[in-house]
Length: 158
Image 1: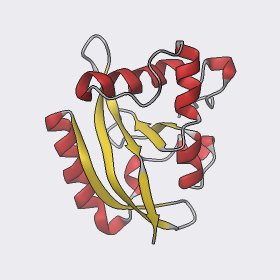
Image 2: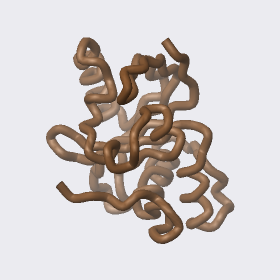
Image 3: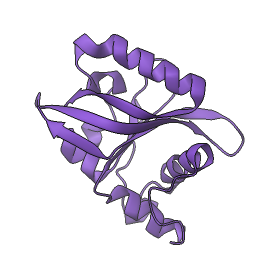
Image 4: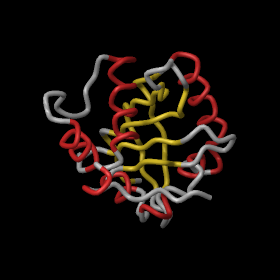
């Protein structure tokens, strides 16, 4: 499995992936997660350091997380190395996998959803309810599907 270096100044906070996340969301919804007037490296740093969770996964048959900002890593109680080896389906409890599959199918069909609610679980088993999350397809400038991303603005410990 290919390892992904953690976001930092040496790699522009994973600028290529950060740009894909930001630009895909904007094209689909007209929304910005960070100040668009900032220079690109500052936007990517702001995304990584944002007070809300931002995650993305790749296009593997069993998609693996390939980005998690600092808040997401803390919320899921994982290191960068562990997070970027985790199949995204494992962020949900086994009993809600069918619900998660329906969610992902809806995102694939419509491009994004902005009403996701559900329970997620951290690496230590802490459960939390996510409310009004946005989940969207990552589409590059050539129209190629590159995975999916999500932003979690609100969550409640269970």
